Every structure is written in structure tokens, then in C-alpha cells.
Image 1: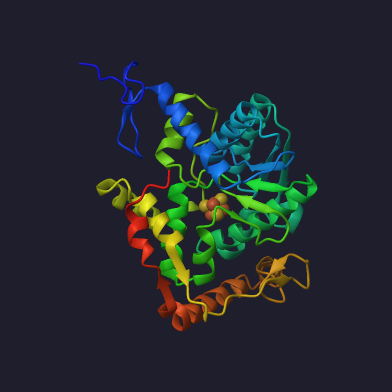
Image 2: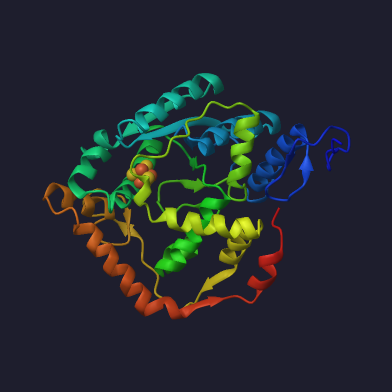
Length: 345
Ligand code: SF4
């Protein structure tokens, strides 16, 4: 016998929400999903009227749903934002070139202006040529460092005030786990923040911080959004993949594990005596950096001198030093226990 939606008590339930296990109808799912994102935006005062906001758009499910939902909420609640699509072309043949075709279609579908900036244009290297030089072991380190800067540089070209990214609850929980596993305390303290301006240029935020990946996929599927779903050619060796597998196993036995990890991460405090990096400017490119030369410039120098492990070896040593010197100083607030079982939304 068909079940009724547990929210409206009228329509037939067609899905079970991964986040709450409620059986609900399609319209109620759209409503709760969009309302939770709206509440995240409003509760955290992410934007102010008139902001020029760039949506980091890769063509994948997260950023496609983000673009759709941001446009929907901006119109529905009259946020007064000027929205743009901002894409990074890492130069990965057979992957990014195809996904960017999706973004170009999204530009037309959502009627949003689009800017694409490439690694080739900014750094003189594509990811394909970097992988040729460094192999497949550390490629994501290069890609991650370069992408962060590339987004900022694209944002400057568009004169933006704010960048939003499609990082979802699963991504945030994975990052918390990875930073714990690596003993990276500066990143651990930053990765739970919903908005950061550590790049020194503009605010960057995650409106999907509490949205489950499964619900984003469900939303994209039910709304028949046009997105690209192929994995990056170079992803199998990404360290994040192991954290993701671990998180999926946890979620299978306890669906609230994703939010629990986020709330635990939010409740952690780094002891005051721990020395955190001091942010200044890279003496070569002027980008924000905690060293005299930023990570992107060190990685580029390694590539250009034919020593691609230059920046990698340094970062591993730093991580080991941090691990040895500081891991024992993490203080976990007692409120973490209550945060673990509380629902933020
Ligand atoms: Fe870049 Fe690695 Fe992501 Fe591929 S998987 S896009 S190489 S960070």
C-alpha cells in the first residue's frame, strides 16, 4: 500500500531522505532541501545585498545544484545578489574539457554570466603536463594549490566580493578526518568554518556545508539538472578517496555520522599555546602565504627546474613536524559530546 508523505500527509511518499530517514514526496523534498540551504545562508549571514557572488562551477553535481539553488533562492527571497559562474580549466583532456561543456550549457539554462580561467593561462602548465612531469602520486597536491589561487584570480577578474563553492557535508566531514589523520592543526581549525577570508582577497563560503551528498544527487536527478558525472582521470590516487570510503562505511551503519563529525570538528578548539602560521604575502607573486614564498610558487619552481618533488617534500616535512610537535595539544571541548548528538538544522 502506498505510503503518505510524512511532511504534508497528502501526497504519496516517493523517497526516503538520507539525512533524516523520513519518507516524503518530491515537492516536500525540494522544499526542505532548499529551505535548509536558505537557513544556512541566513543564519550565517553569508551575503549582503548587492554582493557580486561567483559560483565555483565545475559542471559536476554539487556545483550545478549550487548554481540552480543559488539562483532559485536569490529570486525567491530577493537576496539582491549578482551571480556569476566561475570555472577553472585544469587542462585534463577527456575530463575537464567535457565537464566545461556542461557549464557552458548551464550558463544558458540559468542565464548567468560565465568566466573560465585555465592553469595553462595562469601558470603555463596544464594538469596533463604536470602529471607527465610528476607522475600520478602527488598530482592532486599541485591541482589543489593551483585551483585555490586560480579561483581567486578569476574572482579578481570579475571584481567579485564573494565566492561560493559546492563543498557539501560529506566533503567537510572528509576534510576533518583527513586533517586529523595528518595532524594538520591549522587546517583542522579552519576547515569547519562555513566562510573563510584567509585568502586575503574575498570571502569564500560553503552554502551546502550541511547538505548530504546523497541528497544533492537526488535533487539533481529529480529536477533533471544537466550535470557531468565522470570522475577525474587522475582521481584514484587522491588521498581523499580513502577518507571518503571510510566515511561511507560509517554512514552505512549510522547515517548521522556525517553531521556528527562536522559538529565534533566545530566543537574542537586548538590550545592557545599552539603557534599558528602567520599570514603574509608571497614575495614573488603577492598571493597570501604563511611563508616568504607561497606554495604555488614553490611548486611551479620545482616544475620549471625539473625538480617536481621540491614543494611536496617540504610540505611532508612540515606536516610531520606539526604532527610531532603539536598533535598532543589539541583540546576537545567538553561540549563536543552534546554537539555530536545535536542536529544543527
Ligand atoms: Fe585535480 Fe586531483 Fe581533483 Fe583531478 S582528482 S581534478 S587532479 S584535485
